[in-house]
Every structure is written in C-alpha cells, then in structure tokens.
Amino acid sequence: MAGYIGNYPTAVPLTSADIQDGTIGIADLSATGTKDSTTFLRGDNTFQAVSSDYVLLATVDASSSASVSFDGYFSATYKNYQVILSDVFPTATNGFLRKRFRRSNADITTSNYTDGGGGSYQYTGVGSGFKYFGSANGVAYIRCGDEDGQRGTSNYAHHEITTIYSPLSTNTYKVLTSQIGLTQRTDASNYNYTIVGTSGMLYDNTNALSGISFYMSTGNIASGTFKLYGIK
Image 1 (cartoon, rainbow, N blue to C red):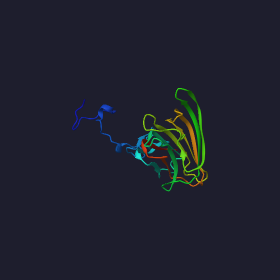
Image 2: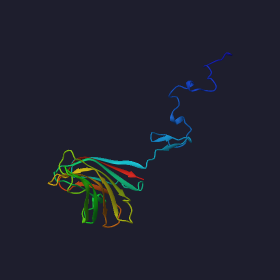
Image 3: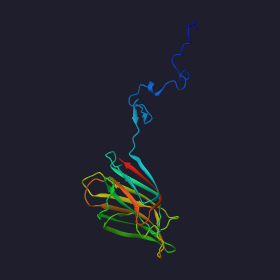
Image 4: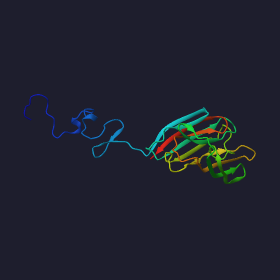
C-alpha cells in the first residue's frame, strides 16, 4: 500500500466492524417522525407511535373500601370499556357486590335500573343444573350476580368482567353485560355456583355517562383489584 499522512484510511465499503458500538445515535438517523421512547422505527424509515385497541386506563386495589369508582376516563378515544375485577371479598358475611353508572362524578342512584341473568350451579353432594336468578326492574343498582350468592370472606372470591357499551352516546339507554366468576351460597340450601352471564340497563335518560362504581349491599369491599380498560 502507498504511504499516507494522518489517520489510517477507512476501508471501502464500510463494514459493521468499522463502526464503534454506540457511535450512531437516534438523532443521526434520517427517518421522519418523532424519535423518542414512545415510538418505533417502521420498515419505511418512519418513526411511528405504538397504537393499541385495548388499553389499561386505571387500577384500584380496594382495602376496606366503601366503594370503588372510575370517573373521567370515558373519552372519544374509545368506543367501549371493560372493568376486570379479581379476588373481591366483602367485609360483611352478607355483603353482595353491586354497581351503578355515574354522571358528573356522582353515582346515579335513581330507581331506573333493570338487570337479569343466570348460570350453572351445584348443590353440595346433590348435583348440578341451571340457576336463573330472575330480573329486577325499577331498582337503584345493578346486581353483580344473584344476591343469594357470595357470603363470607374466605376461599370463594368474586371475579368479574363487565363491558360498558357506548357510555358517551346520547341516543340510547346505557347497557352493560358481565361475566361473573365463582361465588358461594352458605345458607341452608348450601350450593356453589358460577354465574355465566348477566346484563343491566339504566333507562332514566340517554345522557352520556362519566363512570361506574362498585360497592357492597352492606359493609365494605374488604379487598380486590379493579382495572378499567378502554376498547377502540
């Protein structure tokens, strides 16, 4: 090789071994778009924000709580919403979980709710079958299952997925549906059951909602995790 003055010339073409790790930063890339920790680089050399159709908006861990409420999370970003309840227990042995819609950061307590549902059950030592717990109309809440159900604070937790449909619509009454997990009756009938589906509606007017609340028929929510998700 001929002589040279200065630094040793770089080989042509360059290889990855010729570039020290960490030499090229994000700012050195010619890609378009915002380059930060919330975006990724697409194959067309464009930075794109991560998009999700199912997003966690809020979490509440109850601890002897009079109620658990989500308010102010409904927006035009999401069409529908889900609340997932895990390991919910009452403080009172005869406490049953209920729910209400909210407007303007307050529970709607008028007697304009209706609900209904059913599920499978098993009598201890007897067998199994279908339990229809009927419907309630003109009441001030939506039941989270049959109120002959969960009693006591050990072993049998309440689990639930509730879907709220179009809460910001002003054209229709507000509706939710729920899938309820294992619960237990401990009176003389002595049976365990799983509610497989319930629904509820608020028909006072068609005004938009701002949130939802969960509370016990008596006593507090001893413990449980409540998570609100937005669904596009």
